[in-house]
Image (cartoon, rainbow, N blue to C red; front, top):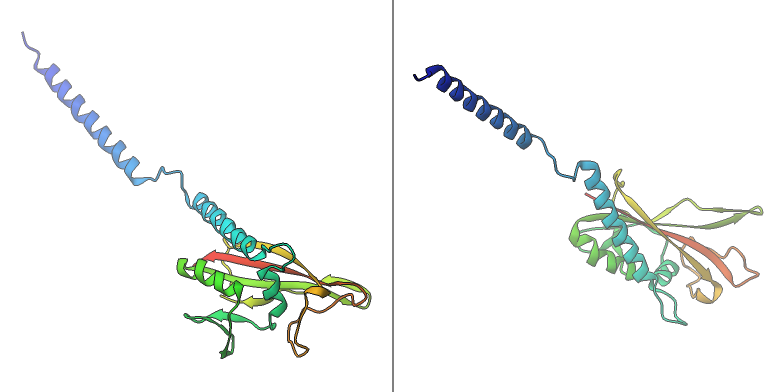
Length: 197
């Protein structure tokens, strides 16, 4: 004797298991199970930007024995004005006829502009007034807008000595000699801020 109901139960079982399998496949496909969630991805991008910024400052701050670094030269020769990328060069904000071309802008142009990485360079230094010594507010050398929440800041302190300074007396550089009685001139804190646009 043949049992027709057994074949029907088997067919129903196969159909039900196929339906459950399709639901599981759809659920897996609909949800992301990759390890790069948005927060993990942001941390990865921030780490890459921090390493790139550190490499830029390390390259600029390297000097042969007896020489001063490119970064120190650029800080000494800075005119105290703010500059921004115009699409071809760094021009003064409010005066596009005045532009800046130095080691900092050259390396920023070759490493960051081509990759679409927004950046700014801030400089702060020591102020001495009424027997008080404190850090100045950061002054912008290179401006590219307001950094995003995921921006990274890389900093390098540059010690300036009187022997390093060869400056035009009409210079508008805001960094001044805080101790004329010694060879110490000032300390500049250079901050490179990087973020993805």
